[in-house]
Image 1 (cartoon, rainbow, N blue to C red):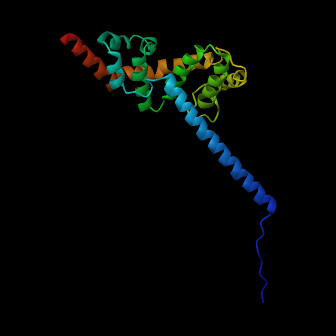
Image 2: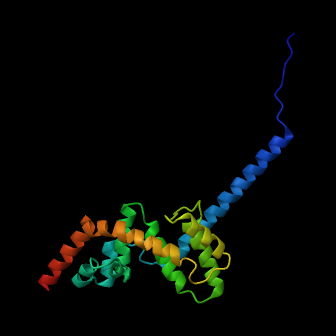
Image 3: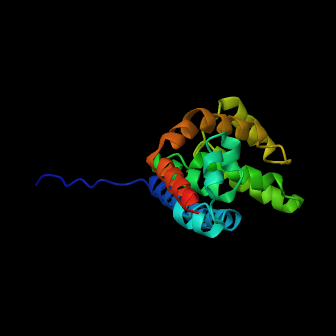
Length: 199
């Protein structure tokens, strides 16, 4: 009668697998929890970020002059919440909304007065936009990313300044010119100019 052989799994391997599964589940829970916290944070910080251009315009009584001024510079566009919302909607259509979200998060961060809140905000911005595995990782060079990684342990109001400048320049050179040529902006411009003439 031929021998019957059974494949034995090493108890060590089983333990390693179990440990890895537990670690994976823990990480997923942490990631999910962090995502919820961050979403709440961004929503409270940027009430217009997820609004459409139409609803933002309605609440802020957008004037033809304001829409026209957006074409003067990126600074003018980002000076008000309506412009921020309009540009955010455009970047979402290009799948690059992380740039405006990071820039706005930095603007909010620099206004933080409490050192306790500064630490929490710095950690959230780092995890969401700067960390190598960040869900909305921004396009910055290795040295800037490394510097922030060190500074975030003891953050100051200027910890993200260099990265914010880099992202701003990227938007100014790349996304902003396309926004000015976009159908959404041109339609908004024409619509407001027409209503301005009627008035």
